[in-house]
Image (cartoon, rainbow, N blue to C red; front, top):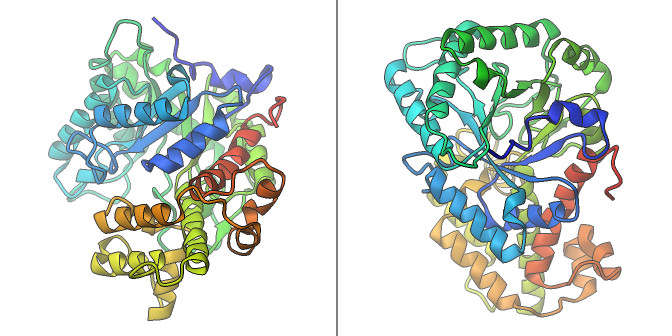
Length: 431
């Protein structure tokens, strides 16, 4: 049986090579391909994760089951010439969250069916997240209740692994789980997880796993989700402060075999990301920032297209996206606040990047296709790239990035992902 490449991640920081790994949490093909470009020259495997809402046995909001998602990612890897053997697929927030409006017995039945489908499809990093209450329960549950439910999910997963040469899954646990996709209200400060809380969470899960005879599965628990003091909302980012997390970081000495997993690391600086890895937060989750960069590229190309081909389209790309979001407001209207103008700015430019939910919309997909077809493989003027895609201008001038629409989009995503790769390889020779 092939060993899981993440099984010894706790030891990476003490030996040559990478010390951590980025976790790419997106279902957009361009974002995934851009990440593949960034990871390819490094020594890292590529960890791509799907969330319970994106991908599940019922299709999720992408319409994909776990088996579909695997085929989707592998097809992108084939086109991008990325080695399939370097792919690791993970499931994020696997638990009752999509069905928490149901009674707990029904919600957990759904969650077990979901994790079975992930395990059977060969996903080998599984985040067990049962921290939320279901119908009639408190919003947040105790460590003991969360751990018992998480253990039942691990039991379902263990019974569903493909067998043969496939690696056994590794697990992530944790009850202090940030809101997927960033905070929904303005934030000013965060409480870092206490060492006592982290240690108690691990103890509760160990007991719950042992109660079900899952000692071997618990030996493959590699990480704990904690709050290191990083988050973002619609308008701002709370940056990592190593001093505030030093006690939590030191607690890893009492948690042998484990690393911390940091969610919501989107928009952190490269130096902050490197500090997180150095301090033991070895798994860096990033999602909205990837599609935020992609959207930036789309809007820059939209402006360039208007300069080069004025009035060639019935409406601009941005105008199409405004029409699409206004026509189906469920994914943004509860999250964006203020005047009509303030809400408009948030729809297009918010850090929470709720526009990402609209990329599968047929009108949005057509608008991307129209934009790319209009610009085609034309070498775009450096002056317009400098004006509307300024971050990419140096790479174009230095000959590292081809000035075409598709390459500029991929280059924008690649540049962001390289910050995560460099931070993960802070003690390595990758540059």
